[in-house]
Length: 366
Image 1 (spheres, helix red, strand yellow):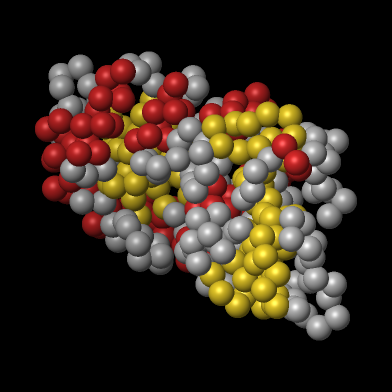
Image 2: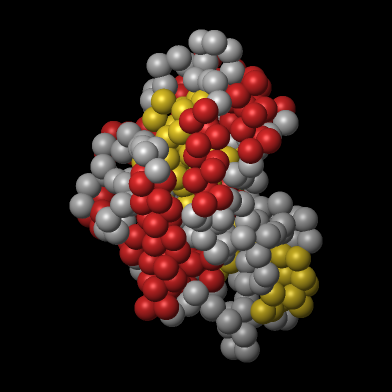
């Protein structure tokens, strides 16, 4: 708690998203040390969704970014980023949004991912004579969420992209999210390596057919350390590392520091061992099973009794002094990415524990 105590909490209404600026800086330094620099890092902004954090990353030397939504891509372009990957299928109305963004920022290198031939034709049809979009084939190496099968199917898509007007084949993208469900670090390493090897083998196949593979982008926060040095992998693209959360910390304790918390107030004490916080599902992301968070200043074995939109009832372990109404709890979300998306702004804390300003979560939503 000594590292996270805020000295002027009376200035912040709760629940509040709080970001410790100096810890963000530390995490940015730490990932640079892990990777031996930022040249092979394509930082994903889906966790923080803030132009001000992008600026911090840029100042450190990060110049390539990944995102999931056209809105995130627009914020990156407005911040001066010239190398942007939208790692999400672009279909329907999103096609025109992406083409319009490319038209508004002609100097940027804008890429998207794709795994479907029909979607590629629609994307090509939307490009005018003066618009060119880079496309990376998205590969499914085990997560079974999006992506074409590695091998011949990916080769066929690469050739389709190369032949379609308005599109250029820019390489391969693979996200190994299934690695995050592996608690044993050695098995996690092996799973990550097996996953990325399918992508590397696909790269070799495509290049053997005379089609150049400009870039292979791989790996999120659970696997990037293992795959960054694999020959054939050009970039890794983790995102959660910048803020970290209790979910990834259970897999890799202490790899990064918690840089974003939710500050919550005790609003009621309905029983001798019960407290109610103002941190319900609209304050801490509801997309994970309990425990939804870890409270830094409460015992780790608190019981999650009831959760509603604005209420979180906790039962304290026997012998635990009950906080009073108005006392504050410092919550580390299990999933920080979706928690950040609940807030319009973050309260920024400096290295002296002072609340100094607010930053807009200006890329939230879609």
